[in-house]
Image 1 (tube, rainbow, N blue to C red):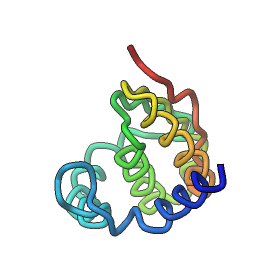
Image 2 (cartoon, rainbow, N blue to C red):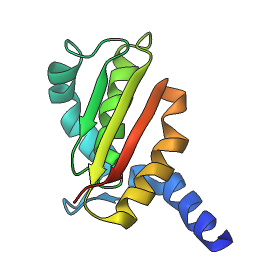
Image 3 (tube, rainbow, N blue to C red):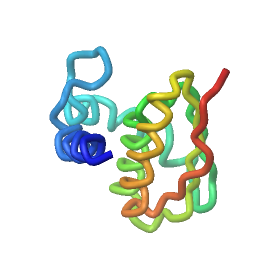
Image 4 (cartoon, one colour):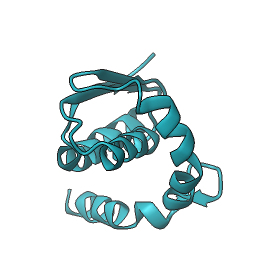
Length: 117
């Protein structure tokens, strides 16, 4: 358990500067490249109390990126609820850990993020 916590803390400390998925770009590089599109796609459409569902949520990085951009662009946006599923149980566990830690400062609630079949 202690080794898992240390590894998870390392992930949290470094995810922004680590290669994102299989794209050979870091989270920060992906965010810079995706911000304009995410602002156009999500800002006019997400309001307080809305729910977002992401299928194949993986570790939760893309969903978190979207919510982080929404919060940066509209700091008064509150009470959005994120749901998702993931095929791999290990990714689902990691996504839940990551989102449990990272969503509260964004004023986003986490609904069920579960293993799909």
